Length: 151
Image 1 (tube, rainbow, N blue to C red):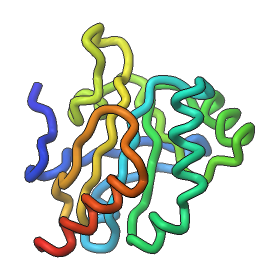
Image 2 (image 1 turned 180 degrees about the vertical axis):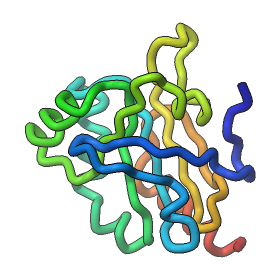
Image 3 (image 1 turned 60 degrees about the vertical axis):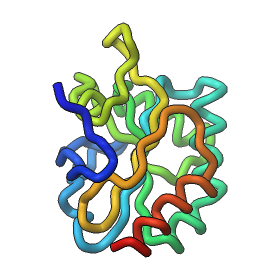
Image 4 (image 1 turned 120 degrees about the vertical axis):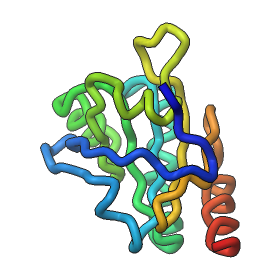
């Protein structure tokens, strides 16, 4: 399977969030940048810290014109509890079959779980940032800003 690379068109997808709302990547094309945060599990220390940082930096993402989504294979109920417990402002998408994670190169070596990966997509739908691990908001937003200047 081919995985999304920087400079390539982002694979389109439709996933449901924790409230059952459909999120279509194509709906953002031409209007917003998108940041996808693939994370292994709801309510674990690393994932909680990562998504709470996004919550705390919400205004910065909004000012940059970026919509941010968390993505993993947990179900809507698990996502709802995670959002509620930590007052998360980022919609959490359900990728139950790991299809989207696979298309974005965010599957661990076992093929059973997501590996922590952050993907930035510009308004034209092109991948401009793809990093594994826990990049800072500054690093993510800098990559999106560089993409703006080169467009």
